[in-house]
Length: 242
Image (tube, rainbow, N blue to C red; front, side, top):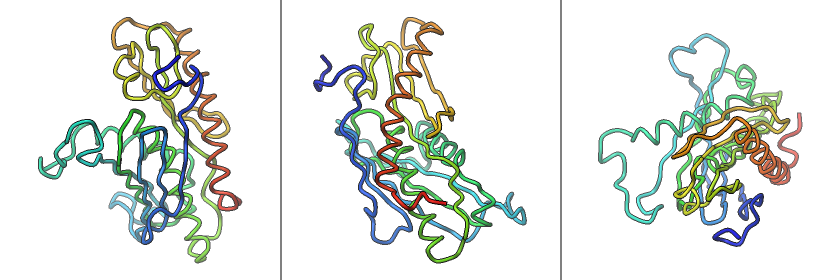
């Protein structure tokens, strides 16, 4: 039995509340167990300089943790003068996952920035940010379509992410912090709704793991992602229609 009473292949309780922020073009708050992430999508009528004149848009992300999101206070990164390397790595992951399912030409020469702020951390913050960030992104695109700024739906598929790992010799889905801290293998998986892989981040924290174990972890993660994608569909409803 796991720390929180779940089965090995069971996700933490997940809730996604769209429209969490009044002023953002798209937003949601996602909760996975005790992990809570606020996601906000902003539309800007400009693109990075290297995309000027390309007729292509851009989707990117930023990620941060509030000072008391964890067990101890972490100083705001602005006090250091620059983002931490971990935050940069995570926000690049989120951006890659979101761009994988968007037709950038269909949004025109504009950018959508998805801010993911961790309100409370109990493991899986980056995967929750991908899953919630997609919902905020679709909300923002739905607003553009409603205003007839764009006509076709640029969303080509859904995307969600989850963590899996080997803890005490057992393969577990959706690790909480205590499980993640003790994991011998830690793997983050991002996947599209139709099953195509977007990203695999896997590390052996001690003993190396086999190809067979990796395949089994990916299958376990896919099972969880299918549930998250089904919940995204339920939350977004007609906003996913072509």
